[in-house]
Each structure stands twice: as structure tokens, then as C-alpha cells.
Image (tube, rainbow, N blue to C red; front, side, top):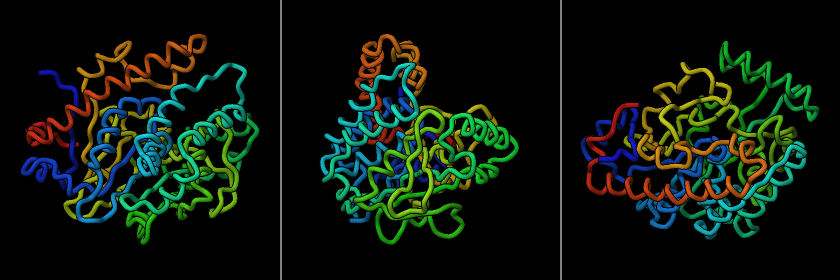
Length: 357
């Protein structure tokens, strides 16, 4: 039997899932990782969650949608007035981006702003802030000192310095960046209380689009977003710098579950940890996480047998239509993962398939 989808669970919920399967009433958080175009493997499952209302709580409570960069955009689309339409607008806008060697950080930022405007319409900002089913937590960072510079040479040196210092300890990142969460709902999400390290501000209709632009603004490549309304003055950039894939305990509560669809098995906490194979989230972060990710049998179905990534922009720089065709095929094939997920959950097979994180 083909293994298209794999399941892993944290220490506090694995026995629960092995006993009763995945009870959707226990899902309190949906987390989306950063990772550029890798998110196209999640399209099928995201659409299925939206169309079925799978993430809507039966008890009337609100599910927290949390993420950075592309993961944050997925969450924002899910909370739009017409989420399926918004999600498709996002997919089309992102996949149809065309960049050239002549693009600068400012021109790329302008194109990214066009993406945000394409999938977030004015009526959507109100829906996001006051959604009846979902609260949101969108990650950005506020750059500090030389990391906030718009001069590429200075910013590049700051990036190099932060990367080197991160090898010693990820806590050194706070020298260069502040973690900032923009959230919706009252009271604020519980993970922002207590020992949370960073700043938090409410999402408001006047800042939703700026936050969306900031969370996808990669340093050095894309210009930062200056002075987001409702937050401290400064330059804001991609939240994946500090919270790349999963680096927070979103506190789904006792016997609650954080559902985390990922594009790979390894979970990388900080963007600079990508090359540090020993870095992984602590068990305190993953203890109530159900991780779902594509198996190798699915990956082998994809064009070139790989999940899309940012290098596709350069590989197909002279043939963007081929890149777009391949990414569209990945989106279509990802429906296999949605079908597999619901089959494994509804049949109860997940109880035997789930492994420890």
C-alpha cells in the first residue's frame, strides 16, 4: 500500500490518538509553517478543510490559525469572507509571480504587495479581525540596528552576523530581531501570556494588509515594511526568521490538539537553523502537536520527484510558464493528500499509523 501521508504526535496526545483516533472536536489550533512555494503541497488539504468546515469547532469556540510567511497567508485566506475564493486568489497570485535578474528589493516588494491586494480585499480585513470561527496569530519580526537597514551591504552583514551567532545559540537572534505577533480575538491567545518572549498587537482592519506584506518579506531579498499601524515604529519582516516552521507552544489546552500540516518530516524552529541538523523544537513545544506530512510515495509523484521551493524561480527564470505548469500540477496532486487524510481519520487507521515526534 502506498504511504502518501505520515502522522506524528507529541508526547501528551499520542496515546490519546492511538486510543480514539483523531477527534476533530479536540483541534484547537491549526499551525502553518513558513517555507516559500513548498506550501503548494498543502493546497488540497487546505481546500478540503475550508469546504468541509473541518476546523470549525462544534462547541462554538474559535480555532486559532497561526503561522508565518506562506503559512500566515494560508491562515489569513482561511479567515476571509469567501475563504475558498480567497485561497484560490492567493494560489494564483503567488504562483504567477515572475521575477528577473533586474528586480530589486523594492520591485519584488511591489509585486508581493500586489499578491496581498489580490487575495485580501477590503471586505476580507473585517472578516479576518472579527471572524466568527477563527482567531489568528500572524508572526512577523521587527528588525533592530543594522538588520533594519535598507542598505543591502549593511543588511547583508547583519544577516551574516545573526546567522553566525545563531550557530552558538538561537537566543542571540534577539540582538537583531524582535518577535511580534499580530492577533485577533479577545482575550488574546493564551500562548501570548506568561513566558512568551516578544511583543503582540491586535489585528485591525487598518493593519491586516501591512501585516500580511511584512510576514512574507524575506530580508535582503524583499524590502521591509515600515511602521505597521498599531505597533511600535520600525522595519518589519518575515516572521519565519524567528518562528520558521514551529517554534511556539500554541497551548491548545489539556487534551487539545495543534494540527500541523508540514511539507517534510524535520521541523526547523528558526530560519537560520535550516543548515543545523541538530536543531529541533523542544518537546514542550511539540507535546500537543499532531504533525502531518507527505510520504516519499507522494513526493515521487511530483514533477522531478521533489516538493517546490524557491530555487524554482531561478531554475525557470527564462521559462516561467513551465514553472507555473509544474506548480499547478503539484496543487492538483495534493488532492491525494486530502483524500488520504480523511480516509485515515474516518477509518480509524490513524490510530495504528501515528508515530512519536
